[in-house]
Length: 125
Ligand SMILES: [Zn+2]
Ligand SMILES: [Zn+2]
Image 1 (spheres, rainbow, N blue to C red):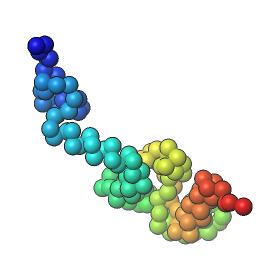
Image 2: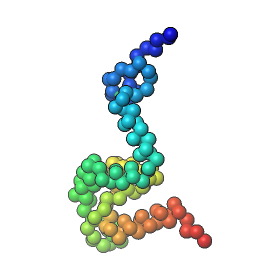
Image 3: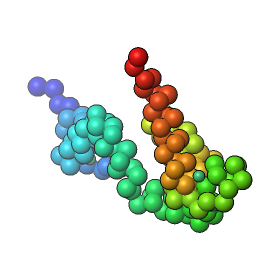
Image 4: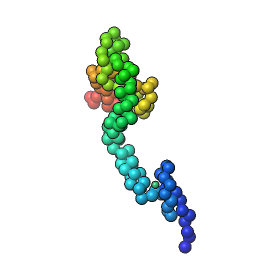
């Protein structure tokens, strides 16, 4: 009967050694959960906006860019409430890159979101 050499758990950084290639007991369930999250893309996105990392980046951006950039461009001074991704995350935009972030007020953000969903879902005729 052939003996398979012990192989490390395929999860990055895990030191568990297994008789059969694959994941250890712990990481099998982690991997399983990750696959589930990819299927539920929307939940994953909501999770991102609730993450501590995003909240910290958002707060820092509002501190350094306290005004709505769209209103500012139109000559109005309006405090920003939202940190927006110039290229939306769901369209592959960088999540934490300052170059992809802009401060917007709620009404400018809503207008931009409406434009983006109109672009993705053409209004049926
Ligand atoms: Zn493992
Ligand atoms: Zn605005």
